[in-house]
Length: 192
Image (cartoon, rainbow, N blue to C red; front, side, top):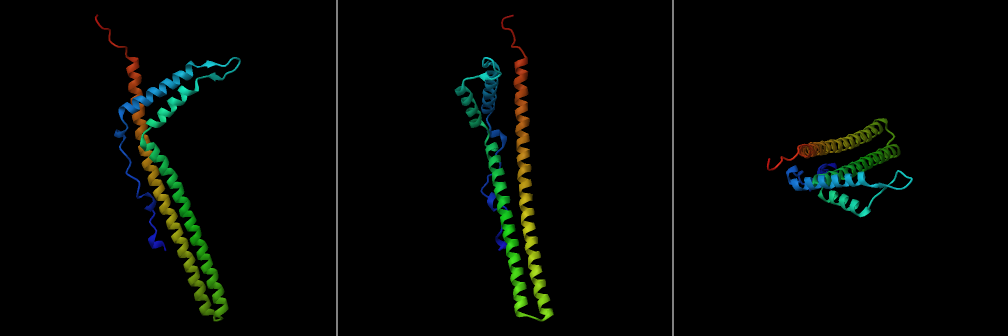
């Protein structure tokens, strides 16, 4: 039963993460531009009379947010999917471990009842109980191993995701810093 278990089976169809180079510079610039435009529109929004609420046009705000969503790199969508898959994988693994424990308990109970009903000899009964206990211990060890493998895989995937997101954050900050520097430097005066 457990010889066929492959903890990586659910992840074999996942491609390796794409390099951040595929997130085109114009996409990054566009996302930053749209974000700046939305921030500016919030700052420039008028207040509702006698309230601290803002009055804004819904459509331009939604269009900007949808454009940002559409231009986000695939790594973010892949990372979200990987997290959902990890949660599902752990849930399935826990269900399998519970089923193994339950089956082991049934085997132990059946072995104990069979031993009581068929054998009155103390030595044979002790051997049957010992064998049933060994089956339970083996099932628990197997369940523990499955859970640990699932956790190891989850940690590995989370580490890859962390590295990927950290890299994206560094690139985003660098791009924002470059944009900020370019705004701070006035253009040279022509014809002087």
